[in-house]
Image: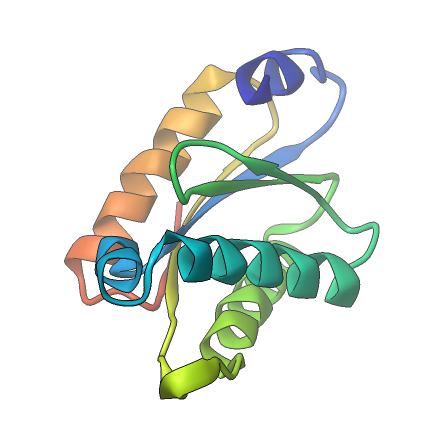
Length: 137
């Protein structure tokens, strides 16, 4: 669905951010899948409430969430992405669980699957360079 949506909007500047909860497997294994689902739902709810109308959210693969932003400048995208990262980092969970997220972002004046691929590569860069960060092209 995400690919179809991206490919269907060629008249917009598009930014794609892929958000991945850091060490999500450990969260699931330690606290259970129900808690893991709660983490994902609450992260999405907080992002949606704080940035209402600025982007669309989609669950992509496993715990990955795709954020689709249209007609935003690179500066606006960076501010929103850092805000998302901090929001997730600042959430308070039971048993003092610490949850962070990494974001891989790709900006394109042309929509398309290539933008999604670049965002995914940037997500891996964020994960491999220490997690809890934003990597942007």
